[in-house]
Length: 525
Image (tube, rainbow, N blue to C red; front, side, top):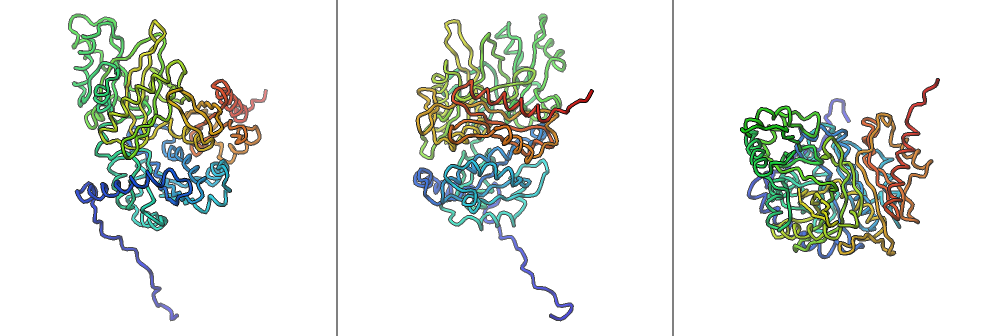
């Protein structure tokens, strides 16, 4: 080739977007794609040998100011790695998208647990795709900014008619991406996202005929909040505290607490106004009052009474709504909450307490059936406060709907994939395919400053050396997640499965003991 002759290059020319974001054309195309999903759900989902492609987008498309306060938030994209277990179906292809690359050792860790499939066979059907972008913006935004990456994903889908997109939560951004990929979404149309807000949830609870804390919704200013606090105190003079929640908060980080002063005098409003700054406290310590009320103005919020009780718990019900409105109760959990006022989600115990999990599931079903009539689709959870009464019975107060995946989703899915079992909401028991009971304790917030610097490879070595592994023969043991957050943030998640609640808790305590032993510096005298 003569010197100076230019090399021919194939230039990338983005195709014209026929469906602009938010347009009527996009809405109609989305509806068309969703109709095609009905056939998939009926014919492909039940058939383990049916060819399919699952595009997994674990984007936390939530308020970025609040999300940025969560340590290692970008690594929460790893929680949906439990869906790699779909590769146990020999003709299933998985495309998993993340902001930053997931280390091979973490992917291998999941593939090693696949029952009946070799790692090599699974790897041939798995495509891990990264945006190589660690910024605080949502993963979906990053993907939409990369037309080449979208084209690459489309090229990996052999048949759009048997493919679908599954996400952590669904907003108009995920809707736009589904349309650009030309595949349906397994989840509720974001046009109905108000139903999953705190305000929308309270209205659904009333429609469903279930108990809920007294309060007020659709508040959009600090003045609205103070008005609601005044009205609650007038109605309940003995009320000590009230909870204030952002409509789209998550894991408790969008919550705040107001404590009424012991002496309010005759002018109730004046007393609340004068004590407000000192008695109002956000759950997330680095979310200021000013930022909180900026978010109230932007997204709205609620105020509700703080439920007192000598014995009370914080359970949840996880549901799935199918394409024809059918409702399935797939789990009950007792949530483990922490923080100064017990508002932060720490972990979960599965199933919920046998004293009330059956009655709890019945209340959850009422709400799910109402949401089904409103057009909800896919997996979601409902949080409750359950208070024991004098006669030992329990009252269940619905407090919020998480119309998305959440902290109880990935441990349950992993257990189901590994044991091929199912939860029975009429008995409150989870049984494996061989009819054996299983329980677990799961947490997303195992943390220690001493864990910082521990790499995924280090954790794998420790877990193997000390036997902190899941045993497929006995169908119990320990599994880790959020491993990518370990080295920088000293944080990880753990799922401990046992033949009894006590056995599951034993595995958890043993895990903490071993990690602390391995990571605590030895101080020489």
